[in-house]
Image (cartoon, rainbow, N blue to C red):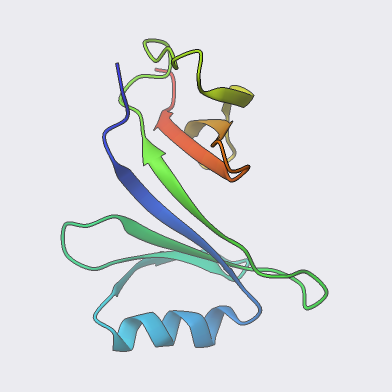
Length: 114
């Protein structure tokens, strides 16, 4: 089993409101927002955008999230360095972190266990 492409873009910001407004002016629609300065936006059938506000003393990061249909059935090739195996998240999925040959971290996301 392999990944099914890009599921999402996870974007950190210093100002949730300004970031959300920026992407809305580019055609993204707000699907939901949380009570802690974060939320999900979508534009058409493409990957969703999740934006989360971080403190001013932290440099905002961006990460692409690759979709995995089934965490238990996914077996990465030995050439893929697994940094963290699939773990349950607080947002209702399972997530694995892998490192590419250039040292970048990638998030692989699968549905939560039933």
